[in-house]
Length: 154
Length: 154
Length: 154
Image 1 (cartoon, rainbow over the protein chains, first blue to last red):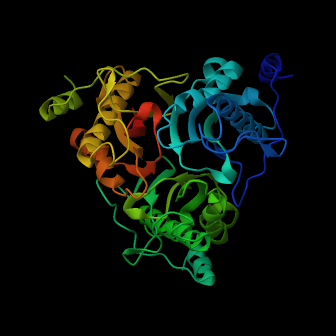
Image 2: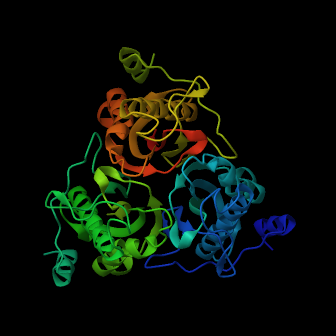
C-alpha cells in the first residue's frame, strides 16, 4: 500500500471511481511534469452531494463537505494519470474553486477550505497550494462547488 | 497548405483575423512550450455573435455557436504565435469556459461543448483537453461566452 | 535599490506587506520557473479598499483602483518568493481578474486595466501578459475585485 493510500485510510477517506467527463473533454492532461485536472463537481456514487447556491439552498457546512468531495474526485482523476500511485505527486500547485453563490454571499474561503485542508491532511506540505476561490452565479448540473487542480508529478 | 488548414477547410471553418485585445494586455504569452491565450469573446467581423445571459437573452444553441466562435478566435491568436502554422500545435492543454448565466441555469457543459468539440474536429486527439466550465453573472462587453486556452506547441 | 524598486518609487507606489492567505493555502507556489500567485483581494493596511459589486455599491473608478491594489498585493507575494528582488521577474504570464458584478454590468475590461496597466508601468514589456477578465456574482469577504497571477522568474 502506498504512503498516500495509508494516510487516506487513516483519515477514513477513499478514492471514488474517477467521474467520466460530463462532455467532450478529458479528465486530465499531462504536459511535462504538470497535470491539469478538469473541473470536478461533487459527485459521489453518481449523484451530487450538494446542488444549488449557498446559502439559499445549501448551508456552508454542506458546501464545505461538497468541496472536499470535489477534491476526492480530482485525486481519483490524478491517480488515473499516475497508474494509481498518488505517491508520485510531488506537489499540488494550484486549485481553482468556484462556489455557487447568492448575491451577497462572501464566505467562499470557508467552503474552499474543505478542499484545501483535505489536501494538506493527505499530502502534508506537498499538499499546500496556491488558490483562487470565487463565487459563481450557477455551475454545471446545479453543482454547489466546482474544483479544478494543477499538480506537479514524477 | 498545412494539415490543420486542410482539416479546417473540410470542416468549412476558417480562421478569423485575430481580435485585438480589448485593453492593456496581450492576445497570448508563450513561456517554454506553453502558450497562454487570453480570454476570447465571440467576435465575428467586429461584432459579437451572441450577447447577454443564457437563457433569458440567448438560447443554448446560439450560445453553443458562440463558444465555437470563441475557439476560432483563440486559434487565430495561437496561429499568430506560430507564424500562422497550427501544425506546430502539439496539444490543447486546458480550456477555461465562462458562460453568462441567469441564476438557476446549469447547462454550461452543453455550451462549452461547442468549444471542445470543434477542437477535437480540427486537431483530433491532440485537441482533447482538460476543461473548467462555469457560469458567470456577466462578461466583458456583454458577451455570452468567454474562452481562454493553454496550448503546448513546438 | 533594484531597477523595479526604482521604477516603483518613480511611480509613487510601494509594496505592501504581503497579505496572509485568508485560509488553508499558500500565497504562492513555484514550479520550475513559474510562480502561481493565489487570488489577491484589495487589502490595504488590513482593510479592503473596495467591497461590493459594480456598479450598485462601487463605481468603476474605485473598482479600477482596487484592481491596482490587488496587483500590488500579488507583487508583494511574488517578491516574497524571490528574496524581495522583483528584478528576477522575467515575465508576467497571465492574470485572472474576477470583478464582483451586478447582472448587466459588462465593463470588466476597464476595471481589469487597473491591474494590467500597473504591471506594464512597473515592468515595461516584461509586464505584458495574457488575461481573462470575468464578472463574479460575489467574491471572498465581499471584495470588489480578485486577481490571480502566473509569473515566469529567474
